[in-house]
Length: 538
Image (cartoon, rainbow, N blue to C red; front, side, top):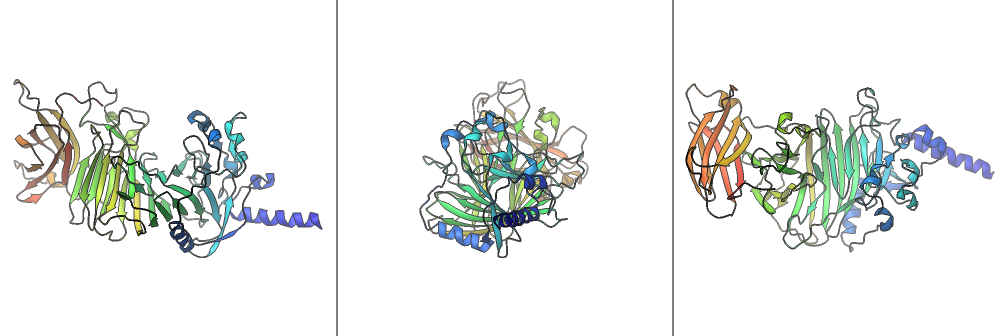
């Protein structure tokens, strides 16, 4: 009888694993370890986050830090998830699931669960229990010292197992990755990773206050329909100041689209609450670059912030690498959307094999009215490309105080271009140089600006017509203002040129658009200029 009981238990476990798409070889080896089933629903997850917010923060990280500290960048790079153990590798759905290992830079264990049905209705969840045998790693890897059940660091959805494997082998290619705190990212239609999104941003760039990075601590994955191009995951978030429950509905099409439904609950007051945050890297571009700072012409994952405001105005704000941390706010009531974009797609402008010209843009579309607030841009000084120094986010106008709650729905678009481009001509370049006139002494407090626009409204200008540059600044004086077609033979490619004279080192906020006969022809260019007397050195 005991042998028969063991057989029935094994058969039941095998059937459950098969239903979750665990590969037969993993079942045969008997090494996929899963916890007991527990009831799950998204409503229950929201209630759990709400209840957690009423209790003090108590991080439950019991993984030995001394061992994780030994899994440095090099050691972590040698640890690869064995795709023979990937859930959904045999379906249902077409996107297998793989996991990241913990390490020195990924200290917080994340618990992974598989659902046996749609998570928006009562169903059951079973936890995938960590085992180092799920990973290929050297025999002397310090990861072998971790205790059983230590947990995972994050996860990836691989490309379709139904695709042409010679062109895109799912075992080597993924399209979504969640790793570290509440960070996640996706590839666009150029098959390239770049900037990241976050579940939340807490007190970014607040003077004399350390930024908080809450963690996704639990994920729950729905099985997908066989022919579906969509995956659904749920997440529980926790930090000293906040708890939250998230539903991610992620679609793999030409690019990647994510619909996010999240509920947040504050444990304590937050000075700057960043909702729907995006994080990117900007070191330098054609606008401002110190002499000899790097051999490449440009280095950035994103080159500007785009905003489609509630009044219908389309704004383009080129990014800066400022002399010190800067925070800018842009009115955003009844916001249509905003995003960090990579507009420059010319390889010759980067000359780098990491393919900066293919980095995706990320657009945020509210799926309801978010009320009063601002789009805020944080720019942090950097001297290298290894740092994410740019944050764009929505910040509600009302104070974020302990006990407050938020329900937010929005859509993220990871693709080459913004999904709702303006019909007006767009800004395509911002260039700075010494002001004044050739052959004359160049005054140290004058800078020349060349701002380029391109698009259909400028193509339609009558022969001989010259658009007007509508220009303003928070301080300083303009001179030599004029517009002209860029002499490259491209129809609809114009530039505005002007000099700005300004004293002191306080930043100058400028605004520019082109118009003809009272009608706007271009989006609005915003720029924050940081005066300097000599060439900048980053």
